[in-house]
Image 1 (tube, helix red, strand yellow):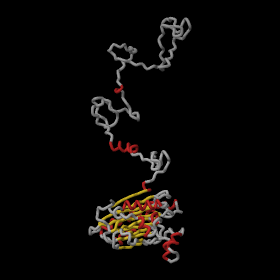
Image 2: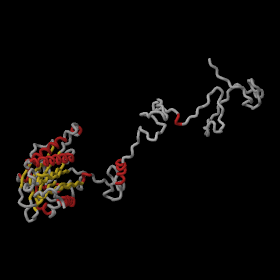
Image 3: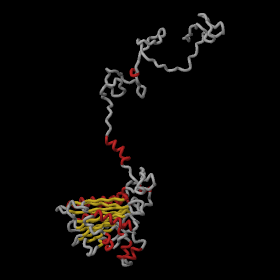
Image 4: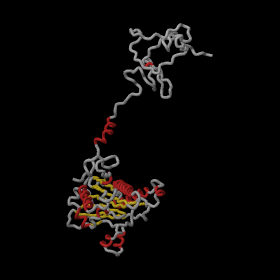
Length: 435
């Protein structure tokens, strides 16, 4: 069995400092037990050693039986990875490893190269501060990520709250209005050419049914589907009226599909109707005007010569229209009733049998076609009233005219979303647009 080593007798007593003789076990002066190993000091200060053996500095001599301590640099100490495993051997002659730490610091390290900063990333990071949105209300505060002003707290308009688009000779504007919390209208505009090369312009306007779920999604899906269908069919030589009918069917299918996305949506909200919207569209060529609709959005014809009579080209699928058609009420009485805007036709999975309405016209003079939701025609209901608010230069400046018409609705109270598309007739040559 190993025994604990005892320290050699000290020349002086550690207790009283009196001299002691070698071999004494106890101090003759104070009786201190000289065989007890003194306790180590309680603190171990770190000493800074400067110099190295052979440079004239007195280093402490090694204890008997021990080897001279090796001199190490920090980079000479072996390292371990995060799992405690030793890292590969290192040194100037060592091969670079795929992992670990290099200590030889070659001039051009060939592993884990650091790439230069991507200027695109830097621009992206800097963009929020450079393009900080300013509040539309106070014009002083910055808009936070939630869309509210940090100064006055005003909620900022969303992108869909006001939309404008121009495509060749046709333009459209949509606005949330002054009373609704969101814009449930949508539109699609475009222009193309018929097989004979003559131009054609297309506009589709949809109004989401507020009593249904996701009306904004319904109007978006319907307008996009119908617009795409028209722009695909017309260049193939499909008759514009047939193309309009097929476009409305495609729009109805797109809205119906929303009732199945996701499949459990109706289970979570069984009391809600399926997504629904109305639709109205117009196709203008060099000599033909085609309209199509389901619901109560409308198309008006306004000739450039304001002495000629304007006309409304659609009939509403609504309670008021049915009362007038049945001879039970005059138009003024029917539209004054609170049930006037209850629609009897719409696109959606809950709709009755789909019956798209289409009609073709051949105007004998130039003019403009106004395609709109009831957010506008509530403030210009008759064809004569609409003709009065359409700017005289509407054919040359369709986008400006659409803005003016939306402004007319907002000035009248803006009780509903308002969407307007303006198309010149006949369709001007390709490349023509707003001045």
